[in-house]
Image (tube, rainbow, N blue to C red; front, side, top):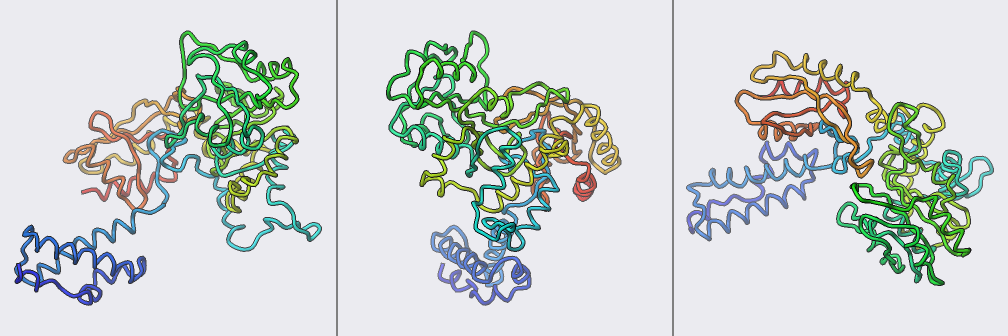
Length: 463
């Protein structure tokens, strides 16, 4: 053991190594040294425990270096980056949900690269509220009286309830007490906002009378929650948002609010484009809903945000809530959201990636699949073919809806699908795929033609 310990190199030996030095441009000397120090101590502990024996200084050096280089490379590669989504899941929660429209991304980058008029009016040279630009657009698009934006939809629900219903009861159907991502539950968000949950109905069936008989002097709101990530089918029944407005009217309570959490928040009527009709935010406004909350990075196709639109008296109370400042969004989000919303004032919104992927025809996708398949033909050791595949909208949007798609199926002569999936995932631009019957599946509904050359290059370099 003592002989082995004396072979452990000094830190300076590693910092002068050519292979270690090549990381200096990407990783500071301090971080590199910390990683090396950990691996040197790991080797020391292994020797003392009799788990490793080194015969000379060179073998000790290589032992530490190999492990340090592996950790450094992982640290450099395991960071936020662009990926190619070949899963067929359009709004992929793990892959950043909605990709920004390229025009929005370019415009956002241009504005945030320098100073901007976030809280300044260039018209009169005075300070102005940062929300005014986005609020005006949301009012124009939805027809609502007012709007406010926070950092996500959970925050939007929290702010609405905390501002309007604190210390009072919120009536919600038992079948709508959903759990959203990362184990956040609607019931717990209601409680954390300082409100009292009043469950009505059953898991599968809730009636108007369930709400009516539960309203009392301490009731502040009737809450409608979109089942964003599941469906209940069979012997079911629920009360619609317009029916909740009628229940409020019959209750003759001026302090009672109807709040609708729409989840994804659709701003376009998809039925005009041959797609299944989905309730829009404009529909909710026209139905007389007092407060409507929805996400900015799902079917809207913008950055992560929680958007609240509705009647001015309620929105104004939220803006005065001290929690609003804690939950408000930064300049990058506001600029990206504003530029996304501008697309909805014209038919250019059809080019927003999420919308485009949903509305893209099966024939167009099949053509893309055959294009990529032809590009991959002739690459040694792989076999490919095109076949129908099921894509999904994902991201808690339109649960259960399956979209017809086409995919390129890839098998390797000497590697399993699992090995191939790892190889694709560990590229400079990772290609995220799925596996079926020991074949890699590249679903073309979520792959852009502009990425075909890169995909071909990756498979060509496979060995």
